[in-house]
Length: 182
Figure 1 (spheres, rainbow, N blue to C red):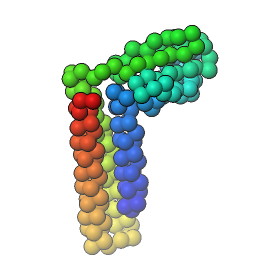
Figure 2 (tube, one colour; figure 1 turned 180 degrees about the horizontal axis):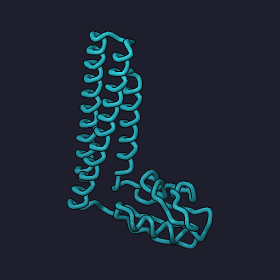
Figure 3 (spheres, helix red, strand yellow; figure 1 turned 120 degrees about the vertical axis):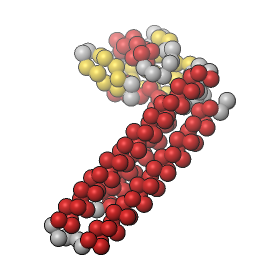
């Protein structure tokens, strides 16, 4: 019963790490823009499905769409995203130079990181709720005794507490990284 909860918690932590990797706004990182949705031919699709995203240097990303008609929609989608980037369109690509982070932008990015941590905690709480339902159901079906139910609930709570502690550690580390002047 706890295996499912562990899997959900691991997925929540991996998702948090993935989202945090996109918050490196002072370094060019293809993961930042790959999942931005672009309206092309009446469909929304992520940039990674329509272009190659790569680093030109440590501060510059280049996006080369496979269809040249996608250059302007890609630039528009990036401009409208929460990333505060200013893409430059070229003949066959889109270039993005990473701007320096101001104190105000650092605080905004820190708030985004906090919201992502809260979303991860919500996922962990949902995992706890589902596991508690499974434990209750197993007790109702006489598959486990009341003592085993109590032990399972205690083990589950330890798992949840550890997950929340890890999420807080991830957030504190990311917040320190964001606020550090490079």
